[in-house]
Length: 386
Image (cartoon, rainbow, N blue to C red; front, side):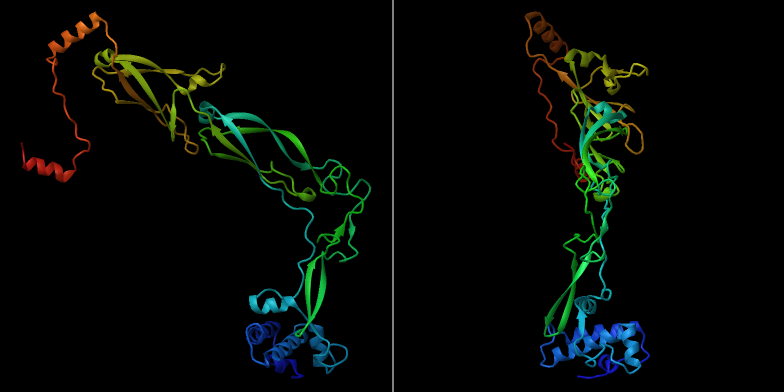
C-alpha cells in the first residue's frame, strides 16, 4: 500500500480541496468492491479512502505535510476510519461527511379541508357563512414550547444537542461510521423534562372554533376557497397550514346550471304556442333573502305566435356571474308545447273544424332528415333535382 496520500489519489501536493474531492470520487467509483471484482480492488479502494481522509481534513493534511503522523501513531493507514457518507459522496455527488443537525421542533401544520353546502343563488351571488371547525390550535398554557410553566427544554445528554449519534461498524474496508437520529431526543437535540400537562409536550391542542367564510360569486360544485393560516397549527406551535372550503351546490327546483348559463323548461298549451302569449319567469334573484336591497325577481318571457316545441328563448345577462370575470351568463328557456290528451265533445268538434279549415283532416306528415346534409350532399342535390 502506498504511504503517500497524494500518490494514492494521483494529485499534486498543491492540489486544492475540490481537485482532491474529484480525484477521490473518480477512484472510489472505479475500485469500490461492489462494482469491481478484481482481487486488488478492495485493497486499492481502502488505500484511496485512507488517502482522502488525510487530505480532506485540513489539520491532518497539515500534519502530514510537516512530516508528522496525521493519526497520532501507527503510521498512515493504521487504525484509520472513514464515514459511510464519503462513499455516498463518491457515488452520488453529495456533500462530504457531516450530519444534518437537530431537526426543528417547530414544523408547519397540515392543511385542513371542510365541505360546505350552498343553494344555487348563494353560489351565484356569493354568501357569508360561519363554520365550526375542529383543528389543532396553539396551546394557551405553554404557548407552543411544550414545557410546563417555569421549565424549559434542556440539551440532550446523549447526542449533546446534535440530534444524531454516530454508530461505528467494522468491516473489511475498515471502520464505517454512520449517523442516525438520536433515540433519546428523537432527533430534536433537546429533551423536555417536564412536559406541559395541557398538550403533553406537543405545543398544540385540539379545539372547536368558529370561522367566518366569505364565498365569492360564481363558485360551483368542487370549487375550493383557500383560507391561509386557518388550518392545523404545527407541532411545537409551528406555523399553521391552510384551510380549504370545498363547495357543493344543491340542485335547483327550476334552473339547471351549465357553466355561467342557466337552463330551464317552460311548458305552454298548444293554443298558447299557436296564438302567442307572455309568461312571468322567476329569476334566480327571487331566492335571495334580501329585504334591504330591491332586486328584480322575475322577467316577462315572450312566446311568439307559432312557437314550436323545443324552441329556445335566450335572456341575455340573467345567468350566473363568472368566478373571475364577473360577467353574467344567460338564461336559456326551452319551450315545451303541450298537446292535450283528453278532449270533450265540444273541444274535439272545434279541433276538427280547425283541421278542416286548414285542410289537415288527413295530413301526410313530413319526414325530416336525421342529419344535416354536408356541403357535397347539397351540391349533389343541386345537380340532381327530383
